[in-house]
Length: 399
Image 1 (cartoon, one colour):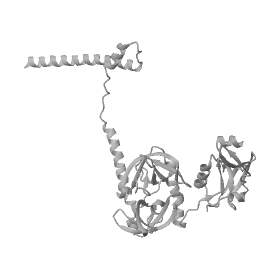
Image 2 (cartoon, helix red, strand yellow):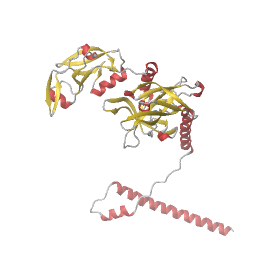
Image 3 (cartoon, helix red, strand yellow):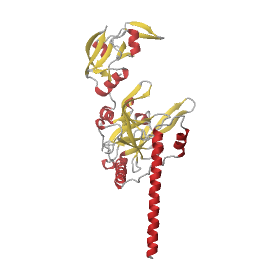
Image 4 (spheres, rainbow, N blue to C red):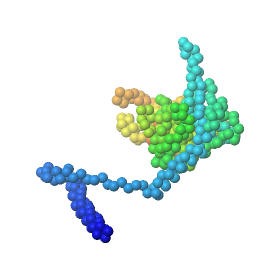
């Protein structure tokens, strides 16, 4: 037995020694390969090339995740699950019935579906305007499968927002709180809950991909300050909440980019906070209006017309009796050809509003929408015949 033990010890020692020598030899060979891979041999050194290609480098060993890493992942999973359990009862399924008139067949009923979320115990529900647009009747399905009729309280098509109201006991309603837009950062977790393709209360998770996007919904309408996310938003998700890790609403899921995956958009909670109270109180939102038509100035246009600035708005026309008309802003006085286009020239150039630079038409509209109200007086900085001038303008409601 002693001899066997001694012999076994020798064999193990020999084996370990051989493995050590093999490891050292392999290490030397690998380091040689690595050094030659960084500095490529010249074409006149075929032996070096053969050596580099004959000895492939071994992949680095993969380390299993540590207990601390697994604990962090499990905690993040629990957080998302807890948010879903807390918020999903506030998410509702909306069915809208629309009657369209056909020349041959007469009235034709159709249905559309979407999502919404409860914001108070009085039965108010926020959703997208396009979910309930032209609806003859609206029905809401709560998380306990109760189906109740809903009344359209107010809508704001330019921001694609609408408020519904249902008559149910307050104890059946679980409102979801609104977050703060100022706390949002690109890269933060974004959680969407909705009813895609009629699949009630589906959760998807992603991140905030971008903030402050302008989203053009049709030829004449742009929603400003939109959140871009890669959380999956599909048909039926429209009107559902986009949430942060506190379970607060940071946006209203509204659209996806066609023919593109991982690009969805949500109306910002700042817009919700600004518009929804007006919809509940008045049934509509009054958009501030200046009453000018003009061109976004580019360096090319500035050079062609000999303008003193390369950014701003060249005023072409004014609406009669508009705020801009009353304030004395001047429109075009002549028509000139730039390339193959006719441009109305000679009008005032708008360069700033309340000391905030105006880059182009979108920046002016965004400032008016996000920072002003009907009846508010703003200061416009303009250039008239190259000379700076400031005018006070009292904004009216957009007709």
